[in-house]
Length: 359
Image (cartoon, rainbow, N blue to C red; front, side, top):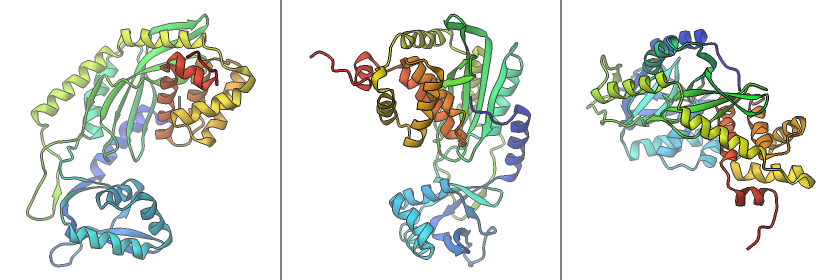
């Protein structure tokens, strides 16, 4: 599993960010992109032409969301940003004023980190942490296997060693959960099962959300630009959701789901690969499951090193390679792809093996 922060480091960073971040509801007619050095910054301008805050740097997430809101194709937006920033600012500013609307701009450390709908419901990392950390602290033997905060998401990966099984003799896996949240519109609050393989500390995220909540709520509107302060109390539905999160975390894992995944692993152990063309099988699997060409090379290397030429071995090669990926978000994606490989049916496996099935 990809290493990240310690839980102490994460807790400190969550507290720091909760104090440093600010959210604004702004009419787009009061927003302006300005070329600055080799890039662009975002201005929030009052009715008298005075900046409401210091001009903001813009991260890649907010850039992508601005482009999507204005229907500017991503490739063209990126080309303007890198090759012709003045053209980008001209295009964006023209459309912001031509079709004005209220948007939520989320900021942190002088950076516009998200450009969202005014219906976006803020469920922030501090709220999630305050709900789940005391519950996890009460669990006997539970351990934080990996934690991280990226521009996109917060991740808490917790293992419960009291629930374990053997895929084959000596190959022990333990159950756990992944708690994730995005403050920048990159995903819902989500709790998913996790399986950790002790042999090489591979983590596998099971794409079956036990608890999920999208960031959609009432319209935030105002007659003028304003700073959006945190609510003093959660709305009733959010309180109910936090209680549901706590109940799910108390259960630690779904034992039935864990044993289902172990069953998939055992079945995959018996699904042999077409050994005459291992690179071809890995290439086909990579294409089918969204693994990039560069990642595919790393998966092939891990597969060969393991000498487990089965579907189970291929799944583990993907999750093992995820530990070498610098991007934590992408590493977690690969942990989920490792599980997705286990779920393929016999016909799909035959196609990956380039075996012609009978009509």
